[in-house]
Length: 105
Image (cartoon, rainbow, N blue to C red; front, side, top):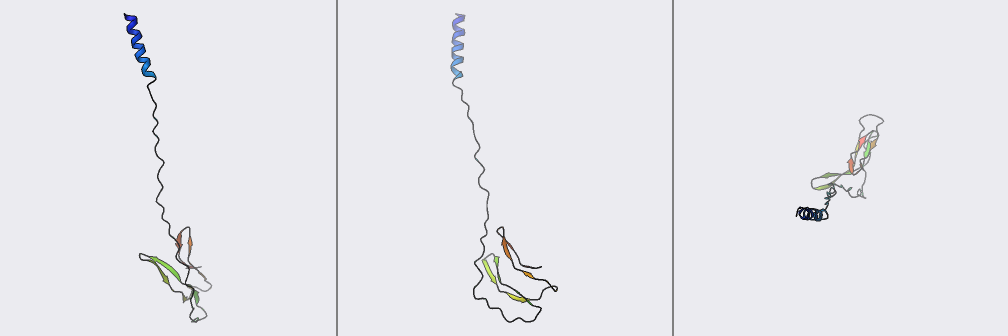
């Protein structure tokens, strides 16, 4: 009787060996990060007329777009006097999707 009992216990125990399953839960890859792309403004206006140069020290600073809450706004070019003699105007430009304003160099 004891042998029969041990045989049944072993049979029941062995029947559960094949029933085990390994479940691997993979985390989903991280979602895309928010990317803000600022498109450059439209090209400068074609019909830009420079007024006469007011003096020999003046340098023409070309017009450019300024981005505001309502979109882009055109700022007209103008004659400017450099802060010091020998300075030149470096126009603003887009670098890496960001606007770098013009400056005297």
